[in-house]
Image (cartoon, rainbow, N blue to C red; front, side, top):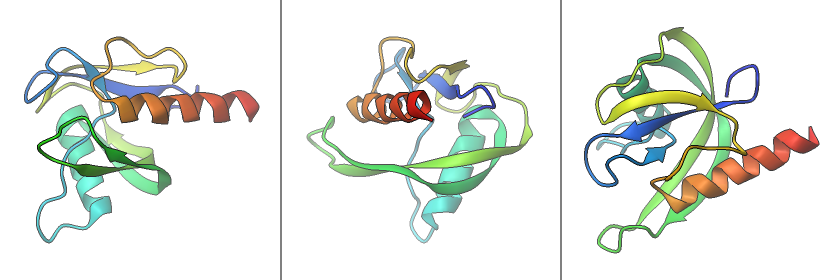
Length: 123
């Protein structure tokens, strides 16, 4: 999230859900720490270097019947770089959690964004 409470989202250009928006994401590689994977994936997809903070949310992902995964979303602080799409994204942009672009690629991102919007509204 930026200082205005907006979340950086990216539009997918590879893999599944091309043309749909998501919180930048990826997979943990064998032997890789989950926080390092989050930092690496965010950098690869957005061009931003981040410091990974506390866990924001954890959800089971049921959107792909062939591959059950567990998503872990972290809060992060920008440490450097410039926001630009790369890797599996063709666009990135800052959006209020209560007004993400459509369509969203993953149902769990909608849950995370709704929680962020709710927490932001009551803060």
